[in-house]
Amino acid sequence: MFGKCQVVNIQARKITDNLASLVKQVDSLVDNAANKTKETKHAFVVFITDDPEASTSELENLAEKHGIENIPLTLFDGISGPEGYGIAEDAEVTVMMWADQKVAVNHAFGPGKLDEDAVEKVVKDAKKHLE
Image (cartoon, rainbow, N blue to C red; front, side):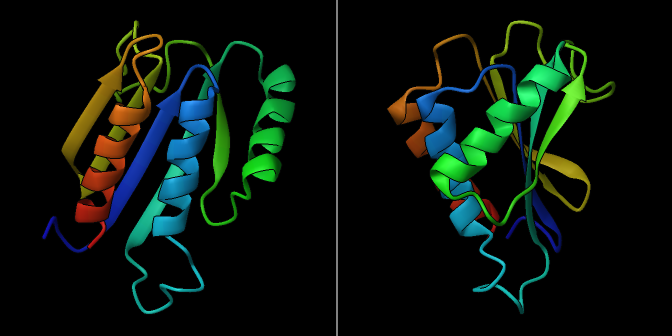
Protein backbone atom coordinates (compact mmCIF):
# COMPACT_ATOMS: atom_id res chain seq x y z
CA MET A 1 0.00 0.00 0.00
CA PHE A 2 2.71 2.52 0.98
CA GLY A 3 5.62 0.95 -0.90
CA LYS A 4 8.14 -1.85 -0.61
CA CYS A 5 10.10 -0.73 2.45
CA GLN A 6 8.03 0.66 5.31
CA VAL A 7 9.63 2.36 8.29
CA VAL A 8 8.08 3.89 11.41
CA ASN A 9 10.35 6.35 13.21
CA ILE A 10 9.42 7.80 16.60
CA GLN A 11 11.46 10.81 17.76
CA ALA A 12 10.81 11.91 21.34
CA ARG A 13 12.16 14.49 23.75
CA LYS A 14 10.35 13.11 26.81
CA ILE A 15 9.41 9.60 27.91
CA THR A 16 5.81 9.43 29.09
CA ASP A 17 3.30 6.64 29.72
CA ASN A 18 1.60 7.42 26.41
CA LEU A 19 4.92 7.31 24.55
CA ALA A 20 5.63 3.94 26.19
CA SER A 21 2.21 2.70 25.04
CA LEU A 22 2.91 3.85 21.48
CA VAL A 23 6.36 2.26 21.39
CA LYS A 24 5.05 -1.03 22.80
CA GLN A 25 2.26 -1.20 20.21
CA VAL A 26 4.59 -0.37 17.31
CA ASP A 27 7.04 -2.96 18.67
CA SER A 28 4.32 -5.59 18.36
CA LEU A 29 3.63 -4.55 14.74
CA VAL A 30 7.19 -5.33 13.70
CA ASP A 31 7.51 -8.55 15.72
CA ASN A 32 10.55 -10.11 14.07
CA ALA A 33 9.51 -13.66 14.97
CA ALA A 34 6.04 -13.27 13.46
CA ASN A 35 7.20 -11.36 10.36
CA LYS A 36 10.21 -13.34 9.19
CA THR A 37 8.93 -13.31 5.63
CA LYS A 38 8.16 -9.59 5.69
CA GLU A 39 11.62 -8.12 6.06
CA THR A 40 10.48 -4.70 4.93
CA LYS A 41 8.78 -3.78 8.22
CA HIS A 42 11.03 -1.63 10.35
CA ALA A 43 10.72 0.78 13.24
CA PHE A 44 13.07 2.64 15.54
CA VAL A 45 12.89 5.16 18.35
CA VAL A 46 15.20 8.12 18.82
CA PHE A 47 15.28 9.84 22.20
CA ILE A 48 16.45 13.41 21.60
CA THR A 49 18.41 14.69 24.59
CA ASP A 50 21.11 17.05 25.78
CA ASP A 51 22.28 14.46 28.32
CA PRO A 52 22.72 11.08 26.63
CA GLU A 53 24.53 9.51 29.60
CA ALA A 54 21.62 10.17 31.96
CA SER A 55 19.06 9.26 29.29
CA THR A 56 20.53 5.83 28.64
CA SER A 57 19.00 4.45 31.84
CA GLU A 58 15.61 5.94 30.91
CA LEU A 59 15.65 4.01 27.62
CA GLU A 60 16.83 0.84 29.32
CA ASN A 61 13.97 1.16 31.82
CA LEU A 62 11.47 1.74 29.00
CA ALA A 63 12.63 -1.39 27.18
CA GLU A 64 12.64 -3.54 30.30
CA LYS A 65 9.38 -2.32 31.84
CA HIS A 66 7.39 -2.57 28.60
CA GLY A 67 9.09 -5.59 27.01
CA ILE A 68 10.35 -3.77 23.93
CA GLU A 69 12.16 -6.43 21.91
CA ASN A 70 11.82 -5.76 18.20
CA ILE A 71 12.74 -2.13 17.64
CA PRO A 72 15.93 -0.32 18.57
CA LEU A 73 15.78 2.46 21.12
CA THR A 74 18.50 4.99 20.37
CA LEU A 75 19.75 8.36 21.60
CA PHE A 76 20.56 11.55 19.74
CA ASP A 77 22.84 14.03 21.49
CA GLY A 78 21.34 17.45 20.80
CA ILE A 79 17.90 18.74 21.69
CA SER A 80 17.22 20.05 18.17
CA GLY A 81 17.24 16.50 16.79
CA PRO A 82 18.95 14.99 13.77
CA GLU A 83 19.72 17.42 10.97
CA GLY A 84 17.51 17.07 7.94
CA TYR A 85 14.60 15.44 9.77
CA GLY A 86 12.73 18.69 10.27
CA ILE A 87 11.77 17.99 13.88
CA ALA A 88 9.75 20.94 15.14
CA GLU A 89 11.35 22.74 18.09
CA ASP A 90 8.13 22.55 20.10
CA ALA A 91 7.38 18.88 19.30
CA GLU A 92 7.68 16.53 22.24
CA VAL A 93 7.03 13.54 19.97
CA THR A 94 7.28 13.26 16.19
CA VAL A 95 6.27 10.10 14.33
CA MET A 96 7.31 9.74 10.71
CA MET A 97 6.42 6.83 8.47
CA TRP A 98 8.50 6.34 5.36
CA ALA A 99 7.77 4.30 2.27
CA ASP A 100 10.77 3.75 0.05
CA GLN A 101 12.68 6.65 1.62
CA LYS A 102 9.84 9.18 1.30
CA VAL A 103 7.76 10.47 4.19
CA ALA A 104 4.23 9.14 3.76
CA VAL A 105 2.88 10.07 7.21
CA ASN A 106 4.06 12.68 9.71
CA HIS A 107 2.56 13.33 13.14
CA ALA A 108 3.98 15.94 15.53
CA PHE A 109 2.76 16.42 19.09
CA GLY A 110 3.51 19.34 21.38
CA PRO A 111 4.09 18.89 25.10
CA GLY A 112 1.36 16.71 26.61
CA LYS A 113 -0.50 16.31 23.29
CA LEU A 114 0.36 12.62 22.78
CA ASP A 115 -2.70 11.41 24.68
CA GLU A 116 -4.50 8.06 24.44
CA ASP A 117 -6.57 9.17 21.43
CA ALA A 118 -3.44 10.35 19.61
CA VAL A 119 -1.68 7.05 20.36
CA GLU A 120 -4.67 5.15 18.97
CA LYS A 121 -4.62 7.23 15.76
CA VAL A 122 -0.88 6.82 15.25
CA VAL A 123 -1.05 3.06 15.86
CA LYS A 124 -3.92 2.80 13.37
CA ASP A 125 -1.83 4.67 10.79
CA ALA A 126 1.20 2.48 11.58
CA LYS A 127 -0.82 -0.72 11.09
CA LYS A 128 -2.05 0.56 7.74
CA HIS A 129 1.43 1.73 6.79
CA LEU A 130 3.10 -1.57 7.67
CA GLU A 131 0.60 -3.79 5.81
